Length: 166
Image (cartoon, rainbow, N blue to C red; front, top):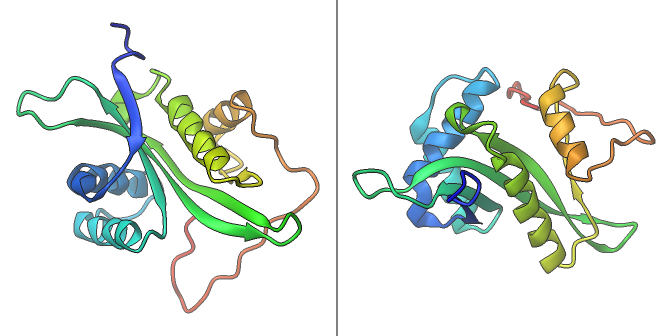
């Protein structure tokens, strides 16, 4: 079995919360946030329980020695709407692959699972953004068919002294 064949991507549920929260906390730390595993778990639990997000996981098919799954990466999508197309749109807000699992095609697999979800729900498109200095992610997105927007600028308004994380 090749390294890619040993990976499965599937939609996360509440049973995945502990492993997913560890990945999500690592993702936030990548963006220079303080570790907060309990906050990560609470945030993800709310998203899953209220169906505010759809989360895809990349897992090693072979479980760890203790029988638990090996969580390799995740993609989190949020629903929104396009007034122009009068259809649903998905925002791929979070994509993360654990450092030790990078270079195995996991990011591409998560993007494919996200695209399939968008097609299955009849969405007009999937949108995402990344840092101007994140060349690795930009290459992955472009390789996966995403097109860099050259028509619109994106603006953000920071509210009530809350940190603005991009």
